Image (cartoon, rainbow, N blue to C red; front, side):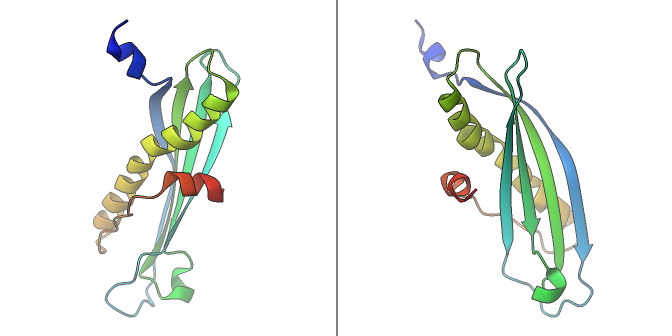
Length: 140
């Protein structure tokens, strides 16, 4: 048996789609910049189809309540990743793959969208720091 068959994941990333992008400037913002305030949530759906498809949705809320908190803008994004989990994978292992690995694969796409969109909106580019996926899963 070759080594590659031992290290290939049972999780396969198929594609992702952008479900929503909302961006609102806060014309009442006073100041030069603000400390980044953001929240990331996740939703996981296991579909009962022949391909064992799993949908992982990440939702980001950047600078929530911009007017009340004196943030320069508010932004909400939602993306969904499509994954396949190899047949014969136990329910427990499939959940771990979806909750940790799939989120880890999808999160950089969300981060890049936030940075690109904020840059193109002609505001200070926002770079979401890496997050602890284990804590995200625990907190949700």
